Length: 153
Image 1 (cartoon, rainbow, N blue to C red):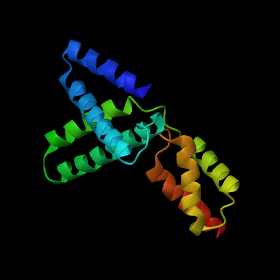
Image 2: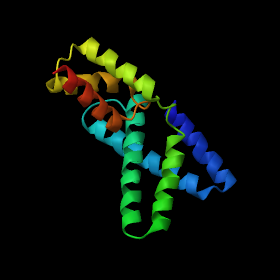
Image 3: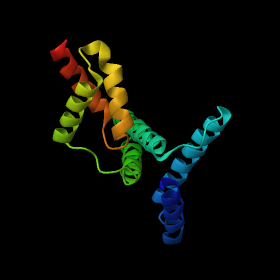
Image 4: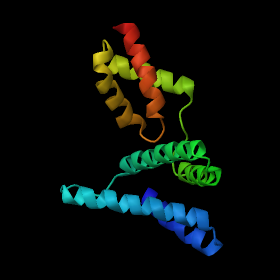
């Protein structure tokens, strides 16, 4: 589904002359093609929608980091370009979970996995990733899971 949407939006960006969006969509498709080639080399199927969402989140994280580096280096125009790419990439992600939904999902995952302390963090994060790929900010969730498990352990 996401693949078809990316192809459609690339064509629309070409027709509209939207160069920033076109460049960003092409960049996403190139990263997706690399992921598919890697999967094929390992004898797996092309990337699923969940894997594509994880790829998009990784790309967003990279761009946020790059924008911070550019800001520190006194290159605001490059930081602005990175943030523009983030805005375009985010349009392909489902609606993000708010604080309350994230907290409830973490509690449910802790209960479901039977996690008793910080040593069980990997199981909890794994359960969350399998269920909420693309909808949850796992960098932020990781800190919340760690705090919740530290309180238990």
